Length: 272
View 1: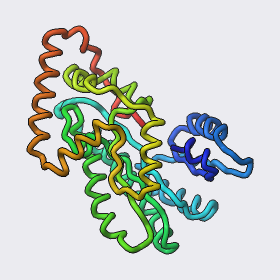
View 2: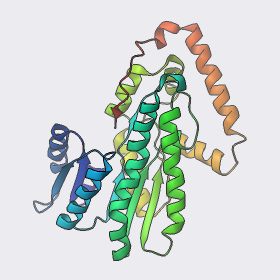
View 3: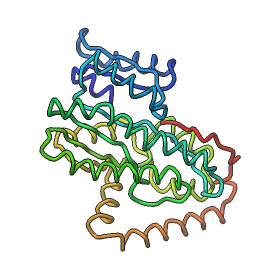
View 4: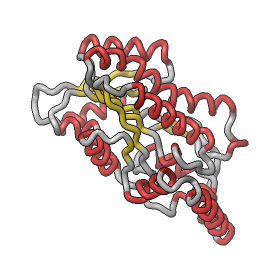
């Protein structure tokens, strides 16, 4: 998305925890700029460390101005079954994925409201509207983003500030690459049913959605169909589909366990 915005002539502020990766991102994004006057400013911060992160954003707003668009995409995960996820890991995932989004909005929203313009984009997940085995911690944090966004959508009516929530499917990112190394076999079998989409495809869908001020953005036809089934037709069709998906995955694992086995030792901080 940053590259796409750069190609539109935007100035950018990007936030990340790792300075080396931030420097690499700045270098890659710079190549997409269309003017030498464009700026890309990195901020090294952890969104879950609110007492440090929010003041850093306030400083950035003072230095660079109130952003027109804010994209909340910081996220970590641990694909594992409930009993294999510690309370500390549940808390860490919630602090980054959900409360990190809250912290960003806390910093920028007052300024957007004062200016009477702005756009907030919250990245949820397909796991944020359909429960998925292996994602009790991650999915709950993404469901929380839905609750936050739904309420904010109403609060922001007639303020000039718009909001969108995005439900991307599996996307070809370093986070997904690391997830695939540690997913429980059944979860791995479920995931292979749908090929992951490219980051460029997701970014294009989001930017088009912003342009049309769509509240719900569902990149990919499969995601749009699932969301339609869940939202328009109700949950009746969805639960049988997920039950069948689970049974099918279990059959695949039982018939070819070697294909889906791996060393299920995971780092709870698989970040994207």
